[in-house]
Image 1 (cartoon, rainbow, N blue to C red):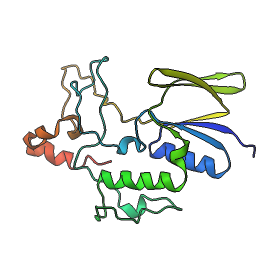
Image 2: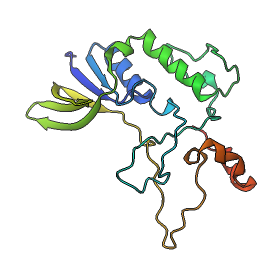
Image 3: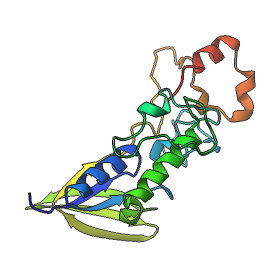
Image 4: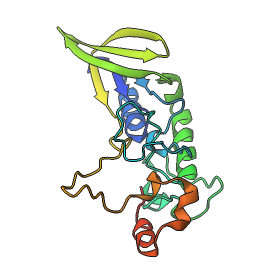
Length: 202
């Protein structure tokens, strides 16, 4: 198999897995990540948008699919990799650990297999275009924009960065998930809504 120059867009768990597999079979890998750290959806941000329903297209997007008390919905022993099991206990020894625990595991995985060195942080991919026999990837880091050519592109961007709210005829949006609300509002949620949100796990 020839050695390919491959771009991976996104350094969440999907991008990290893709990068690891591609690297292991001998391809040259560049991982693009628009955030300032690895982890994708597992990076918690306590800030809340001024427009929680994402109706304002000009808002600053800071939405995450995590809330402070979120735990995984799978036990740690099934969330690891065949060559890197999730056996180390950092601070949370529960079978269903916190999101902080899982992020630490992903960071250790990235360090172990050299994925950190392959990742360009704070770098957003703004365009991917096939030109003749190569993929042109245009990325932006701050004010700096550049184009690079690749043999292949693997898109591993998250689909859970922004909420998708159903549009009902009566303008009703129904119950909102807990991660849309500021933490200080969570205790005020109704008991029935709170019981549904206990199932809102990643």
